[in-house]
Image 1 (cartoon, rainbow, N blue to C red):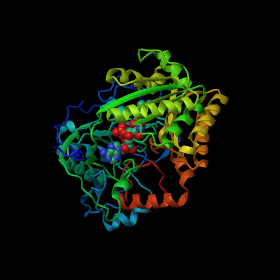
Image 2 (cartoon, protein in one colour; image 1 turned 90 degrees about the vertical axis):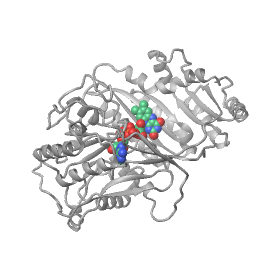
Image 3 (spheres, helix red, strand yellow; image 1 turned 90 degrees about the horizontal axis):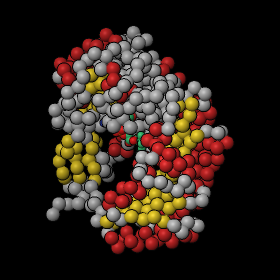
Image 4 (spheres, rainbow, N blue to C red; image 1 turned 45 degrees about the vertical axis):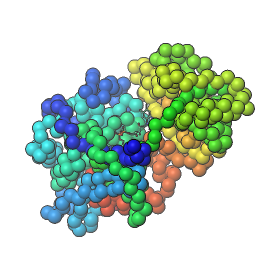
Length: 495
Ligand SMILES: Cc1cc2nc3c(=O)[nH]c(=O)nc-3n(C[C@H](O)[C@H](O)[C@H](O)COP(=O)(O)OP(=O)(O)OC[C@H]3O[C@@H](n4cnc5c(N)ncnc54)[C@H](O)[C@@H]3O)c2cc1C
């Protein structure tokens, strides 16, 4: 029998999908809108601009070649510790690169980028690069991102193997071209935007299972896996990942419980976790979110318009049955005797559909000029009910239309605010800033899962202060002395 803890090892190998040929403007600023995208069908509501667009970029820079070295071979650094293993296309940088690592980064000229595109096409094939305007837009803009900037990548590259990623990285290194890794494009804090242009490297072709292998162990040396987790493409390109597999549960169930107040719903969730009741997921949706889901009607049923917990159960049938009874008891203690429960697979999907449709229902409410801001924080479990209640009051006091969703069992919750982009952006920013401040005061973090990207740079500074950020900058500079990897994200360059 197969080892249930075997691991999948994945990387590329599939032939590159045919892409639109080059045709888009090489000097790509944000002056156009897509009607459809072959990669992600998302029409932007309206461009949003941020203060980050003043970073010197390909349009403004005469591109002196910082630290160009005739001996700058590109190294592949394999990381294979713990649950994640990857091969990272990094730079085996020369002494001259290192010395100049603290100089302000300067990037390639348009002519150099054109030349680099030609070289990538020569090495990887004509179809491996696209400058089609819709594809650039899909790789530099996101309608559900809190931040969008007025630049797009100048090209999108679609490598199919670690070797091809390495080739692209070498060419970018030669010409000082920023590299922005891109996978699903679902991040929401401007994580994959291109404030200084450059190449977006899309991993869509690197979707192969490489091999199954038994679990490896290593606890020696620096934990490079952890270094790359949370680096958001600022340190290197991950080309392989090793995942630990768990046995599929033999039985599952979904429960839905409504509450009179958001605080009572959050308190119940915290109690379930504290009592050690095993649940697969525990999610909170507030009354506003439930109303929106009913209004849009994407789930095929009508919900009680009250703060609601959605709980998943997994395990053997007797374990699931036992845990459901325990949760029912806790619900009664928290004043909510009524719990809907399903163990039929299809009916479970219907019950969970409200959770799945939450953001899309908010997006569907937009009218012309309205935008969505969706962001997250996380706090210790003991503070989560209080934080959610305060944040909800803050939204109400500001007369902003926003809903609350949370992976509340992890102390993580999200605000999704629908607002008039022209009139209300500042108020939304202030409200989000206050939410982050409250989370930090409660010994929490400015983001539980969305990452820092562009949108939370200042929040990260508030959370960590100067010293940890200096260490992060030093690590980045030593691995990426030219600051080519996803520049402008997580923290700003400092000399
Ligand atoms: C509706 C919705 C629900 C969401 N729910 C959740 C949730 O429940 N939990 C959660 O954690 N997040 C959630 N998110 C946020 C988002 O989906 C996650 O942040 C997700 O992990 C991003 O993955 P991605 O493949 O789309 O990465 P992308 O958006 O493509 O990239 C994210 C970052 O990783 C970098 N990157 C991408 N590929 C590589 C690579 N190969 N090597 C190095 N760096 C790379 C990029 O440069 C970027 O900085 C949600 C988002 C949406 C829109």
